[in-house]
Length: 283
Image (spheres, rainbow, N blue to C red):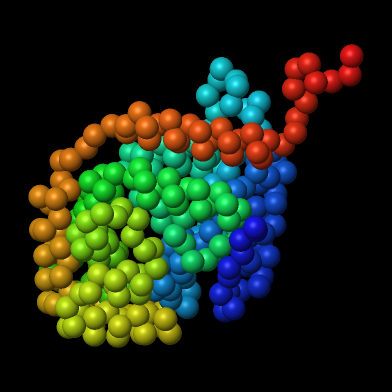
């Protein structure tokens, strides 16, 4: 089944441009795009009226590409154009990073906004992530991300752009979700869903709901000091996460590596572009 799920308020011109860009990538690079989604604030559920469009995709190339002794780029990037940002990862890169604790590919798989994709492949990747993603590494990913954002934007206690609150708040909420769901590693990407499932204090919910409403209708939320309730929530979650996730790291198991290899091989063979192989031609 082919996936496509786009909000009705998306710019038709931008969607057409993204569709054209994806088709152009396949033609120019001989690749097959397996999944193309919206990332960033639009998919997280807290866009501003002037938010960019951030299309991310996973692709495979023809099988012959992977048989070369020469290393080739596993990323395809298009030049930035105004409000449009399009780039993607080779499926092999995505699988390796997932097993190393990079949660970005998990967020792509959970994106509610899909430009195109194969439902079976996305479900297989989600099942792989649910089974083999290392909770400790995923937690450490969000802890480091959140602490960097906290120190970068709110470290001095002065007034800051209110929209930047979400940069630290989303990792903090994800850490809380992981703590409250000790048997799971794949958290919701959609921020309102994430907040609902991590059951934050009421004072935080009220402040966040107000920020979400205002952010959706204005380009700028203004600058103010970080609200104490939100500061306490963010810092408290980071503090609780440190002993749970900090410093924990282990290499992927043999089972995980074998499962990743099998998933990759199956996808690469299924979507091989049909180039002539040695011995398959006339004679």
